[in-house]
Image 1: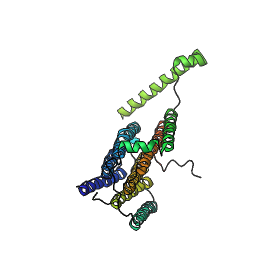
Image 2: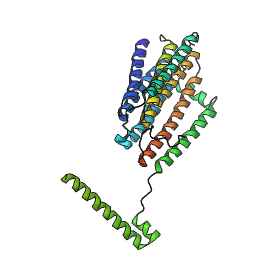
Image 3: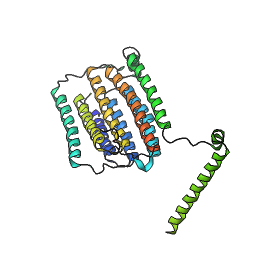
Length: 206
Length: 101
């Protein structure tokens, strides 16, 4: 039974990972990554890591992927860039480097004598066991992660809020530069509107 | 436990390679971030597998910490993508080379 679940989950994980890399549309890539995360959670359940598997689904599939999909929807079709035209030697070098690392990992894993797998009790991988380790032995790492997450949230707000200058309202311009500035602004926006209308009618006539 | 730990490590190595190829070859920053997620997750699988091998919970705690760091990395990466979109920059990693010497 275990071996069937393992092979189904592994094939799903590898196929969806390939889809993530090969798809042009980032929306499809993100959905394929969702399948990859679910398959990995199944593999983690086979390793009796129930809490990590649940956290994988909740944190990744629940939170991170929703954020990804929001940004992909915000960016729109501009995000659709395929593998594109690259120098062939660059592609060959990239694939070669990746395969080199894969071979290295396989050689190390094959060469290492892992020995017998430890026997574990029913409590292994439960939220209680993980939680206890998290707030005793690994309290510092736990707190550092929370600080890093807070910094990342602040950075995300700063990045997201920057960029295009804010358009002031008429009242703010009036307070700052007086009546004539407001008139100039209105004139400018009216002229821009006229120009836009002219260009659209011109295009439809053509 | 009928499936050996090396099998999980093999799957993890394959996933890591696929993610690495994605990071190296794709030009859309969104897809690069998605491929990076594959790499981080394959390492998580390795940590959990080795944790099962030695029978301790240390590897699983490590995997949880990696998840937290990955979430932070995604926030910063997506923030950069949103900022690039707002400044009407081209979303292409080949075009973003102002800092290259």
